[in-house]
Length: 553
Image (cartoon, rainbow, N blue to C red; front, side, top):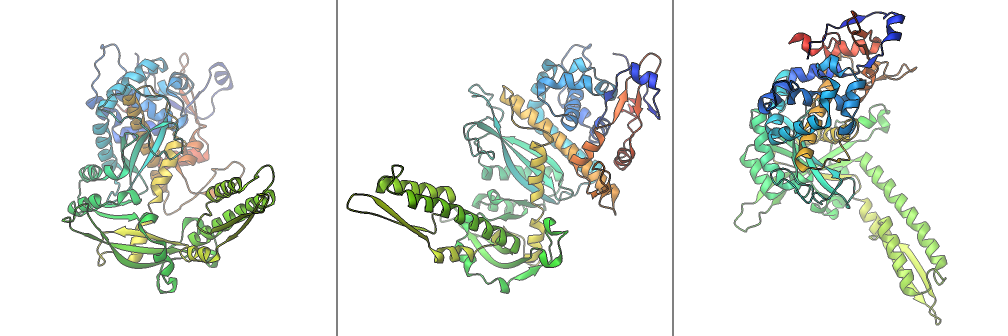
């Protein structure tokens, strides 16, 4: 394959030339390939997955992985559409890879070799990201999510994560699932490491192995790990204490008695200087407030001889949460009230002719509207057997629940002398960053649903998409870092002068309109001059779209 000619920036391509030669979409490909170069993705993949093909097949697994990352960032599509995407986009001009080389067979064989080395690839890329971009990984947010898969998957490779039934986040209990865990740095929410797990793997059981891997990648032991309630178990707490890992995790509602929250005096709690992102543009008096109290909680082991693990328990009250819970309760009470009144009118009709029919429907309403805790019913029948329904809400039960509104608990092993209760809350408030990354994972990168036929290829594809997510988030972080001290940019919204914080989605959407005129005759390939916003973003990213990767090799 010959080496493509140099690319020149075109101020105004001649109308004759533009008419004669079709343009190709360039989009964010120059950014994707530049960030992959900084991470050394191609080199890492090719070193760990050496090509075993004939010498004439010069497209390496590393090149295919980089192209797939570019696909995820510019136009996510099913694997069967990769060739068509490569023809429409300037893949050959940017990557030096012909579109036809990204056929189904080549992509499948690349996923095969990546699957066997994915853990090593992920670890090396993670360490490269930490070094190349100076990511602070002293604070790590950990969480897991599930992805539904279609098919029975009766024949699977036991060495790889296996699709199975579990507790899917999308509530598709009819489908098998595969799970992925993300470790995101508190510094910019960069998901620098991930792993893929079987569909029936318990989240609690993945923590210990994950911690040792994160310590190795971060090259430090004194990590602070933040997570949800699945992080907390006796075994995990013992392991984290032994490994010198500090943790902060939400305590599951079932592990705190509602009566404890109801007995707390909010006025005795210390106020925390924190403003939620949703309240930043509100007036001070309209913003939610946070208060904290503190006590301890003992975790007992499965055996009587196991030493008790004592942890700090931070009791947090949020006025925003309290208001939301009160509104939710009022709505479900109102909806149940309408249905119960209707049932009372229809009791004894052909729809609910007897006591059992009325009782069954009342039970359905109570369950559906989640008002079992405070619904009280009485069903009587006359001499003819016609039922009458009387019902009311137990106000004492409602008031008892309302007294606990706004409260939740955090558990930590951080000593008091290092972090106060308010500090613990402030540290924990970064945890939603992982949820936002899962939104990016399943949204603009289009990870679900999965249709691959083999579980090893599913694991490899998720690895590729997680690498794309890493690049996606690094792009966002790089723009924000180089934009500082400014925080917003004008121009993301057409015909609108609103400023906006540059997010990965907005940045890629703005770059999506970049175009390239392929080489034609004696004319070299030309990049259509970027617009103002595109030029500024490229400058902030340190990317010159006229210098594709192969020109620097």
